[in-house]
Length: 537
Image (cartoon, rainbow, N blue to C red; front, side):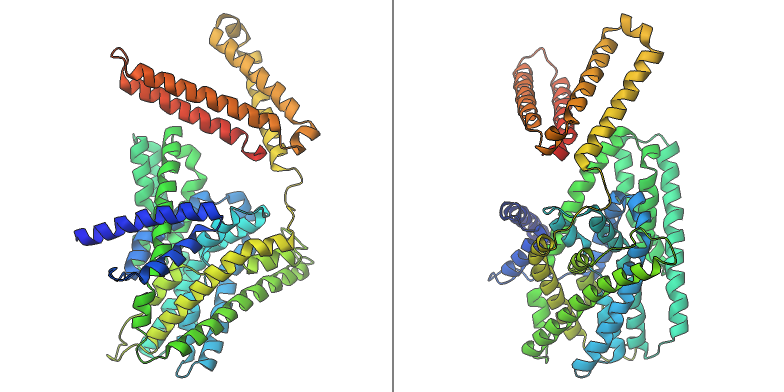
């Protein structure tokens, strides 16, 4: 047991260094982690690392989906609901069909049900890889929104296709009408289960005497509860987690205190980082195990089939995005759409973001070893190898070239006529105006007697004066160099305060807990200053 603990602790240390390397060379960390895992897998004497699919689906998948749901904008999700829904369900099924036909045509002994099984495994893109790449490049907000929204739902549809395909192969029978009915039942009851459990957690957060620590623990427990409850009744655990997460995220301001929200964000950022790092590292480390399991299959043929299927996956997604763009233009004459003229540049970039990830590998690993009649599951090892090749090709090749494709397309922001810096100034100006109006109208007499309120009023007036200055066109467009100077000076002041607090802490008369409280307040103040001018950096 302790050897496994040491191994995984060592992997986490390696992950940290690889992520730092990725930041230094400005490459998306999932790509570096997969390559790093591949390199480690060839180190002599390193224990063989095998992914347990149950571990991925039960331990990693629920919190990663839940975190994604909490980060999703309800407003943007609803605005692009048709595009998100079509790619999460229709395109996943279409991709599965194309892969089923191609694979059964080119691979000897590969039947159509096995093709659908492979299609269900590799049809859903992994949004973690794509969004981590997009963080380092300037892209329109709609692209990130649609990509993240698609990733919330496409795992569910692909896993359902996977289940039906496994059942068809193992039993030798398949009823289309039953499959369609089961598909909608699994989706609908997954939504119901997620909402039901979310309401329970809503009630606990809202009406029970919780603390920030209790609230944070409840947010960690919630996704597992939703997933396990749904899967227990053979519904979609993925849909349950996504639905429950979206519901609780929408009500976060009502059910969580400000301290709970701050603490929860920090905890979830750390959990998400560690989990994502581990799953991408494990993908690379799995290579020797997968190659060893090829058995009688030729490695050359397996690589050839993997590359062909990878090409099919890439072309199918790009064709789907361009086809969806054309369909939008046509259907806009009948119904109102979010964008009646999406063009071809952004759909092409969206099509290039189809990197596959750990859900695909976990699905392949979860294929049963035996059929119901006791015979070995046909082509299991080849399916597993092809899945690995598709993940490697799409993640590394498309991932490394995605920033270049985005640069070539020269995408422009079309959803916001006002830039983010200008929006930021407008919001902050309105907030300051409303606060000053409240003080002047409701607490005018109190201000004259209360020096703290006088100081607050003076600060609000200063903020408004600063924002009026920032609104000047030449200031906004020039990058606001004086803001950088302001940040540098305030950072120096905060550091001086920290140094002074550390000197106080050496004296017996000061309580260290109180010193730590003031240090924490300085940290919050520094982060507030950074966030205030984030759009001017």
